[in-house]
Every structure is written in C-alpha cells, then in structure tokens.
Image (cartoon, rainbow, N blue to C red; front, top):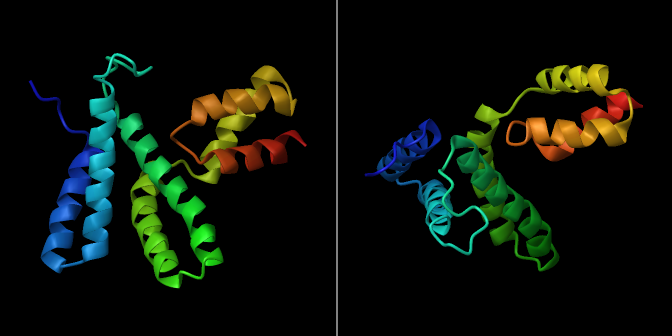
Length: 157
C-alpha cells in the first residue's frame, strides 16, 4: 500500500505541472530533482544497512532533504565563482531561490525563534553551551542552524 503524500510533496507536484505549462525548464528541473531526492531518501530507508532503516517518512524529512539541497548549492556557488563559471553560478542561485521558497514556508520567524530560546534560557540558565544544543534540537527543521546560533549568542551574551 502506498503512503499518503505530505502537503509539501503535493505542492511540489502541483508546481511541477505549473512549470511544465509555463515551459520554465530551470524550475521544472529543480522541482523534479527535489521530488527525486525525497523519493531517494524513502528508498534508502528500505536498505538494512541504512541507520534510518524501517523508519516511516515524515514531513520533517522532506524539509530536511530540501535544506540539504539548498546547502549543496550554497557550497557549489563559491566554487563556480572561483572557476569563472558565471553561467553555473546563475543556475545554482536560481535553483537555490526556488528551493528556499518551499523551506521558508515552514520556517519560524526570528521572533518565534527568540521565544523558544528565551524559554530555554529561563529553564536552563543563560549559558550558551547549555542552551545551544537544546535550541538546535528543538528547532531542527523549523529554523536554519546558523540563524538559531546567532539568536542564541545574542540572547546569552
């Protein structure tokens, strides 16, 4: 029996059809890649050697895959710039913008992150080394790690 698609997957498939109709090849290729990456994670979980073997897919997993794809592009852009490949830099930036659109819908705002961090500070004290791991764990998939780090440093200073 096939599993139910998550809202993010349904949105990706709908947007893929829209990109096909609009003949937007970069958007179409990027969305196809994102859907494939999600599917690949699901297939990887059927391998007994995989540490996540047998675990059901969650919507958070889908967002994690999208975040990993954005991270790959952020890492590739400076390398293409060093190599003088402006065409590839532009392509990677466009793909990154497309993927970030889906991630930003699920991300918490800075104010919401501050609320969580302030609550953790109230519970565990104002020491960065105590608060940061707890904040990272609680906000995983809900806010970018670098942004969480910046806000925790700001509030524990």
